Length: 131
Image (cartoon, rainbow, N blue to C red):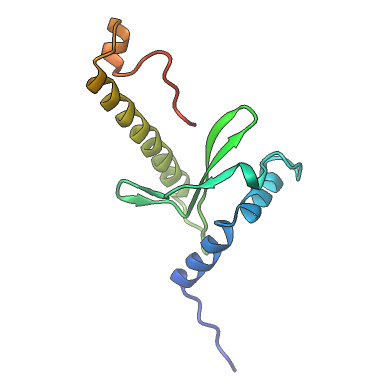
């Protein structure tokens, strides 16, 4: 009998490589979220470095869609991981935090925060975060 070697590392590498292809990524997103309609187009996707501080997402793409830019991420699991929803929320919060840090740093450098709301927030009302 031939035994197949199941390795989490091998699975992750292979499946992540597969979904780093914009056509495969778009197909999955369109199938899961848009009932197969071609809403997310491969040419509108850009692979982003998935490392967020000490964490690494499996695949992260920036979608420049019809209504703006959005981050879309995939977390691949060979076996069920019960706290995965929590981990994904952590990843999302870290993406927002990184964006906030960049904006706050730019405004400190420019010293262009005028209102008390802007000064308290560290960003301008016109600043937008990529969801």
